[in-house]
Length: 459
Image (cartoon, rainbow, N blue to C red):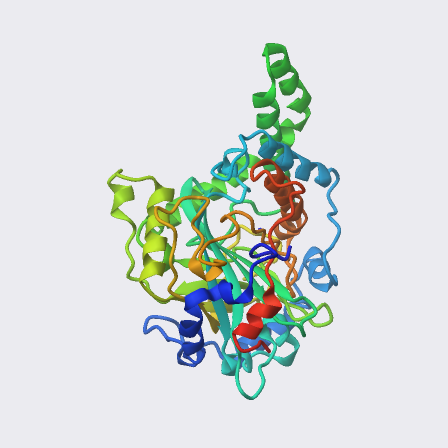
């Protein structure tokens, strides 16, 4: 959701284990990126260059310009927003400790139950990078040397969430960009199927936080008078809570639109979207983009054990992911959508789906999950692929990582992303202390430089 991946004692050779030869053998496969017959034509350089006009578009709101122009992370401009973070920290503290505890029980923004944590690689396509204007060839999209783009080591986590009253899966990726990058890591966050977020902006977020606080205060009260006091102390936020109605309406629309799609494919056959925008380029000549992972194995079916009621969603998806990764290689295309105008691609409305007509998706690289082994039977704690093992076993559990969206060369944009950037590290520290019993609650770390060396180096 800090620079993390495995414990500090993990040796590089163990990161990919026996999967390393397979990864090295696939280094050139990114040059053969699949082009779907039913996909739109590959976006031309013109579409991507139109993104250079996004900042100064005549209809661009000033708040969006402020996000785009700010170098680094902005301060949160909303009164009381530090208290919003405290609300979520208190929510997780109210839960029973243990790695098996799903912190979504305390707040829907929690890390959620692990489905699988695996080693992976990400390799960019040198030819596709050349389609971008020079101002956008930064961070993940920096051009490669003549020899081509080397793969980056990645820690990839699949987890459960619930949004729009749907059981959904998320992917979080922690990518090492190598020693020469100003920001050596990039954390990318994805949610399956949905293309927008139910909470649009800070106003709706404040209503959501107010409801979480009122619920937590009430449930933590020990007696009638305590509960009465909890109601009284939160009554002043009633007006803010009413904004939750719009979020509920947004969720209803998303469920009606995507409910059937969610249950049509298995975990690693889905398309995963960033939902929220990020900056491409720097603050001198910025653009905005969203990104997604498009599966290259779309025929994996939704587990029948879920629809037939024989297994819970989380357990069935965990078994499916483990089984698929044990059987062989899994791959996704990494694609971006570069905003061209604020009417089709609003920056500060996370509930808005961006038009693909004026900003088609373009493939920039490939994410590869190599074949790996898992402890059997897999559970929340042990579902760590052998690509991350040390001396034949995992030295950390599947929830010791944190993926802050701001720890990246691509600044998160918009109200929702800004709050997440401040929340995730603080919330995770509390989560690691309370749920995982770590003191202090620092996340695990990866020796990314050594991993890169084992892969033959990065750009």
